[in-house]
Length: 254
Image (cartoon, rainbow, N blue to C red):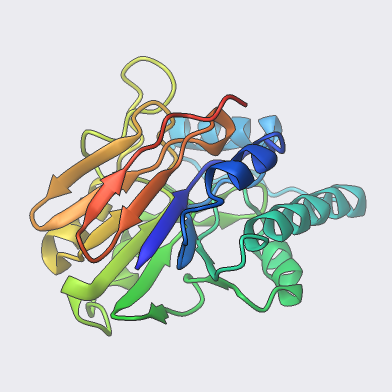
């Protein structure tokens, strides 16, 4: 089984014709996206404030109808393009892809796109399980999407309902590893709760995102951790599941 792994699109629509050409002869079986569809300075600023203070965000009005329409159009255009490669799409939301209710409502028009937060996705010998958004001090899903570490760990407390050696953990936030450096000096996006789940359950792969500065792969125990890099920078990964080989093509010139 051959997979194309993407993350952190952030509205970079110039990538599509370049990807179409790059993937034309790849004979993919599946596309996987580790979150990060939207780009919002306001949501990012609120997330950074909560991250620095550890306090829950102030209650605010739900995004107005105009903002909702803009986001819905962005979601729809993204999945039209991604599903246009003719293979199933598996994903989790990013921390700016909020509220997730709007995202899921938009997905009703796509029969071959699967959010593995909602339920596992099995293809061939492998099962995808996942959790999107950021991990931090609060559970939030209004202006940004975040879960407490204990919320994340509780989701996998009883293990996987599949053979760990044939399970792929799909997350937006990376574990602490060599692929967790975010934009900005010494700003690490990794979260130990994800390491704890990996250490305990040892999935075959952990696909992650959110750390824009360190695309690549690492190994935690028997788990191969892959950060494909940011789509908006022209980066992605190709993975042969049978040989467990990960390739990082030359970044596309967006």
